[in-house]
Each structure stands twice: as structure tokens, then as C-alpha cells.
Amino acid sequence: MRKIVIGGGASGLMAAYFAAKSGHDVILLEKNEKFGKKLYITGKGRCNLTNDCPPGEFLEHVVRGAKFLHGAIFRFPPAETMKFFEEHGLSLKVERGNRVFPASDKASDVTKTLERACREAGAELRCGCEVTKIDIQDGVARGVFLQREHIPADRVIVATGGLTYPSTGSTGDGYRFAREAGLRVEPQTPALVGLETQDDLSAAQGITLKNVVLTAKFGGKTLFSHLGEVLFTHYGVSGPLILTLSSVASKLSPEEMTVALDLKPALDEKKLSSRLVSDLSQRCNEQMKSVLRGALPAGLVLLVLKRAEIPPEKRANAVTREERERLVRTIKNFPVRGRVWRGFSEAVITVGGVSLFELDPRTMESKRVRGLCFCGETVDADALTGGFNLQIAFSTGYLAGIAD
Image 1 (cartoon, rainbow, N blue to C red):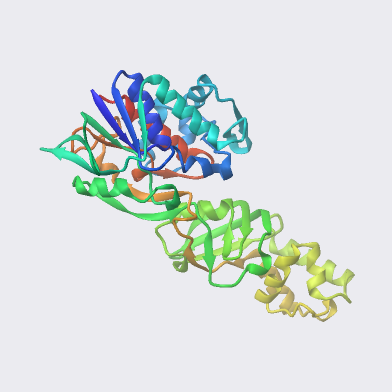
Image 2 (image 1 turned 180 degrees about the vertical axis):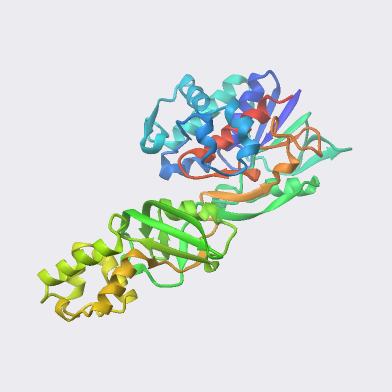
């Protein structure tokens, strides 16, 4: 049986390897000049390739498609991914949050390992080969068309990625192939991405707050509330909490949500008020912008005072009770008025893609077109940061590769 894999990223390389190991004639076609182009930039160039946790715990981090992915993650869990790379000569290390990285801290080593494994298994890897159309006859995938070539096949595996980082070649080809085959494709939105705000927060640019609580509400109900880290940027906010929120709420307009930060979650309003009274008393002749620097980073002080409507130059002994109460409320409920999520060029993943109702979760094969499979970011399944999305790519690629 000949299998053609379209796309030489994480899921495509894994699919090609296991297809070749299963004894099939495998051709992997990548339109870029090299394989794994997106892998090179994941994890800030270090490549967080999976998360060292058991399957059940893994599925708790899946935002969309946990039920569909159940079989894939249990059949090819993180432990198998780690075993694969180590058996093929790549040393790994586990860091905070069970994140798994190559010991070399080089994402390029992950790609090289996958390439080498594919070739050793007997797969043919071709770069600079862009598939223009999938050959489908009478509801069966028969091969692919390139610009000047037709390659027949018994099975076609689409692993072309999503829309994130389009400079790496992720331009939504897989979604087009799916639509042309008559499959339902869910709308795509960027996720695991920063939030542009309505208000200018650039005074705090570069500040990271490590222990704050971010709460987001939609329609009066709490959508998200977690303790973690937030980063202030030139456009608004980012960091782990914001990225997670963007995944949970990727299909909502930020303008429709109420988002706020508790800058001092260890103190309730009463205790914070008492502490503030003490600080104001001890430093009564100092300006408020100086007094607050003991409690907040300098760049954030001005933003907090502005929200609390207190002049930065005002002396501590002149602050009224009403102003102090406003300051306490602002620190405990600092508003972050979102405008729009940042775009695909910065997002880690794409939400949306080939509908899970269109695919067999045991093989990743289309229910409408025999011999046509989709895996990785082309499908409408995604997870939080921490190596979970790459593991989804490896697990779904494995299923597509071994399926007959």
C-alpha cells in the first residue's frame, strides 16, 4: 500500500515514520524548502515537545476534542513520544510543569531526529513539493496532484497544520483540501495568543506579575479564574494566564468579556486596606507614586493610580478615605478592557479546522472519503500550553500512520 503524507511538520513526520514502519510505501511531500519549519520556533526555539503526564491527566488539559482524542492519547501517550525520541538518539529533560524539552535546548534536534527516523524506516521525503489538489474518485482518495505531476496512492494523510505563523507555510491548505472533499470545516480563530487592550498599558511594558489572579466573566457568569503569571506588553497583556484565557475564550470577542486582575490575591480587601493605612502613615510626606512602589512594580504604579483617580504627586497625608478605598478596589480588581486577540502571526495554535464529526477517532480517516486522513492542527482539537498540542500532533499522526 502506498501512503502519501502532505506536510512535513510534527504530525506529518510522525505519520510518515509509523506508516513506513508498518511496511507501507511512504512519500512525504513538504512544500517548504525544509521540514519542521514551525517546530524550529516552538518553545522559543527549544521545542516543548510533550508533557510528561499520564493520559488521563493529559486529557484534562485539552480544551476542545478531549472525547475524540481519548483513544489517540491512550494509544500513543506522552511516555511513548518520549520513548520514541530517546530510542532515536535524542536526550530529553523534564522541566517545570512536566514540560519535556530536548536536553540540547535545540528545536532543530527534534526535527532532525524525526527526519532521520523516517528515512531509516524507509520513507521517501521530498521538499519543495506543493500539493495543489487531492485526487478523489467515487468517494475514494486515489493520490495527489502537484503542479506538474500526479502521484497515485492508496491513502492520503493531510498534515498541513493550521493558520498560525503563516511564514512557516501554515496557510490553511488542509482546510481547503477538506472543503473540496465535501467535509465540514469549523471556523478558525487564533488561540494561545496575547490580548490587545482598549487602554494604553505600555507604561508597564515588560513587567511580569507572577502571582496574580485573572478573572474573566461573560454574560455575568465567571468564565475563567486562575492564579498565575501575566506579562504587560506594548499592545496590552500576554503571559500564561492570558494565553490560557485566549484558548478558553477564543471564539468570544474580548470586548464582550469583563476581565480583571487581583494584583494582591494573598490579601483580602480588609487586610490590604490595613496595610495601606500603615504605609500611608509611615510615609505621610511622600508622593503616592513613591509610596506604592513598595507594593507594586514602578511601571504599574502609575496605571493603578490613574484607575483609582489619584494624582501620582499627591502626598500620602492628603489621601482621603474615599481615595484609599478606591485604591484598594483597584488593586484587587484591576480592569483589563480587551479589544481584540492578537492574530495568527503570533498565535501558538489555530482553533477550528476539520470537524471531529467528519473523522474516525481510531484512524483519523474521513467518514465520507475512504483513504483520506487528517491529523495534527488540521483538525478541530486543541489544548493548553505545556507541550500538549505537539503531543496531539504526534498521537493523531501515529494513528493516521498505522491505519490500513
